[in-house]
Length: 239
Image (cartoon, rainbow, N blue to C red; front, side, top):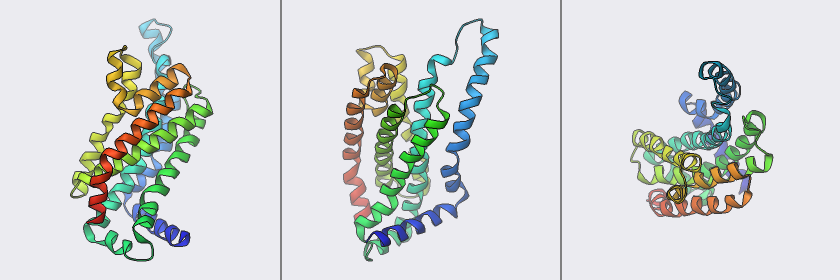
């Protein structure tokens, strides 16, 4: 069974590779991470003499790391979802699900493996390009929760989009998940708890307080979002 799944995954990667935009989504996190790692401190150095303050951007380095940690799985999600929508549209997905690959194998080859790879990529890039010097354990927790968020986004887009154009629009709207980080950094309690419906809020608290306990509510909220979108996603895949 695993050989069949891996063969299907290789075919999936080939489909991504044939589309320059989707292939760029898998490659873009590396230059993005490098740009943030060296560009933001350079901008900070340029602003300090002008503004005459001790710090401008440095207090928000952790926030920038969080945004990068979220963008990596979202880019992978975008690439994968576009292929899934195309396969649903042309009937390839339904054909594959009646082969020995099966429905479960199809979902593993199209969603699970790509999500796992995005988490590994996330950890590796943050380990090498973190602005805040994020500890490895924080890095791993952020990557795992953000991978769950990308699954919920994939389910939302596949469940609601009728074609690739609608899918692209929904992916852009999914950026509202990033607002949770802003709530953690800029809102005061109890108002800040309104942002607690987003996993990013709890990850922001985790990074600010250096306390891994906040990863638990972050993961729970991410799973709730998956649960909200799963039924429609399942109906779309099975129809």
